[in-house]
Image 1 (cartoon, rainbow, N blue to C red):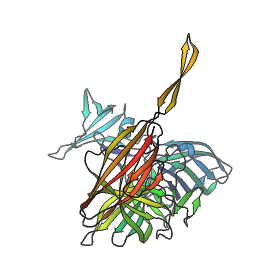
Image 2 (cartoon, one colour):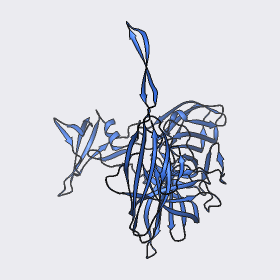
Image 3 (spheres, one colour):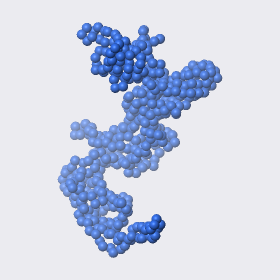
Image 4 (spheres, rainbow, N blue to C red):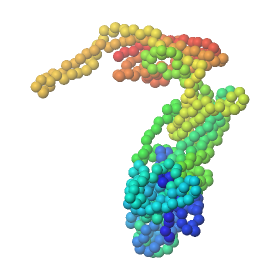
Length: 493
């Protein structure tokens, strides 16, 4: 049967028409029993088991409705008594643009409609070019078809044989026998991805959060996967498009094993029911529902070494909680975004901030920034800094001296060891009607272009040493008040 194709002038929408043919069911598919395993990082494994008639000897089998972004080199084909000889992926899909490109040098029919009378006129035209617009020859004149919505359409005599309406994989096989049997294909494809999205309702009075977790699936493969058995893998397997990601909100990684199936170093999250993953669709499926997880709100400000603020800076607002079993959550959290809400005076949940997390083992301690505080500020300043003359010297470098291209001697260059004493002043203000505690962190004590030794001389508030570069204080600021804290350090360069 020959088909005739109608397309609006230019690159508009097309329609496929055949005598006595019914409209194609958009839910129809040539796929069989489909299983999809989706990884983080835009990668999926598709397994498609179909029942096919395979001829004896050498024959070609077409697999329509594969991913339009299939990686053909990853294909495997399995059918009893048949072996693969050759494979081809036909990705030249039937679109208005491709249809016009394939028609260059051929003759088509232009159908024009008079807007006033509705009368149609038809002319035969040779397609000369489709680059940047469609150029045709009609008799002795050259005309450009404009994509301006005018009632003009192009009628093609037939569909070019090398254009496919759907992404199709062609496999040439050699079979020892004829007959119907199961045939399976498996391949990798980008365009299928997933991430986790979390909704957390924070109760400041009770010090808890209620959390729901959603799996967000995205499909940009150009193909719909119908009633697919879907498995999600949390982890980062190496592939040519993968990249490592950190987890800056994790204060301490967990050491508890979640009660989930594992695959090597990854956790598996199977969907409870088969689902259709439509092309160009985002789908969400719930996988976590936990209530009354202990949590607390914190304020924090990190100050770099020798930083002097020109004006007070708002502190960071953050929420801390634990993913341990005893902590009320009791699960490993796949990478994603946690969005926090809090009820207003009317009891309505309102958005208060969000943050990303990486893959988080069960039992981890998380501190996630949700924004900056409106009415709690810190201004850090270098109050005093003086050099202390030590009279000590150290060898800093050794230079080679050359004459006539040969090393003549080596010269040691010495520099004095410098001692500095620095006093930092931190002014904390609180416009809230209740006291707040700010985690104040002095960073960069041991860093710089080269390592420096340091020691604490004095501090107004007893602090803790987080590591070789950070001193941490918990500073309580009174309601509607101000507090000034000082710390003095000696550094040796």
